[in-house]
Amino acid sequence: MIDFLLYFKIIKRKMILNKNEFVTIRVMGDSMLPTMKNGEIYNVRFVECHQVRVGDVLVYNIWNTHFTVHRVINIKYQNGHYIFKTKGDNNQVEDDYELNEAQILGVINFT
Image (cartoon, rainbow, N blue to C red):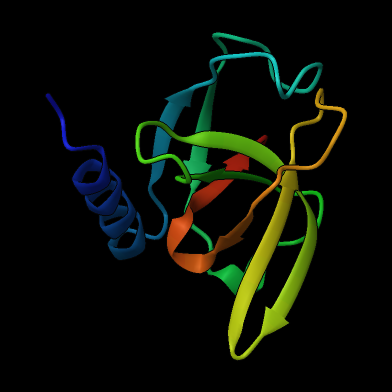
């Protein structure tokens, strides 16, 4: 069995060291319909948290078992740290959690 947290840390470290490199993911589920469909493949690029904007689609680790892909709907800067609020495009309500910088892998590269 793979240790997901270790896997996440290795991928994130690799992306930080190789800023021009992408990680490829396959989207599973329908929370990002119609923008992203189940089974589609996307590139994820590393970004510094100060570069993330409302409207970007983040790839992040909140459950320690898989990545989540949702859109940024709000950004706060508190006590020297960025805090992100997200929502799936196909979801009726925003996510009931906030993300910190350590949980973010990167943003979807649509180009």
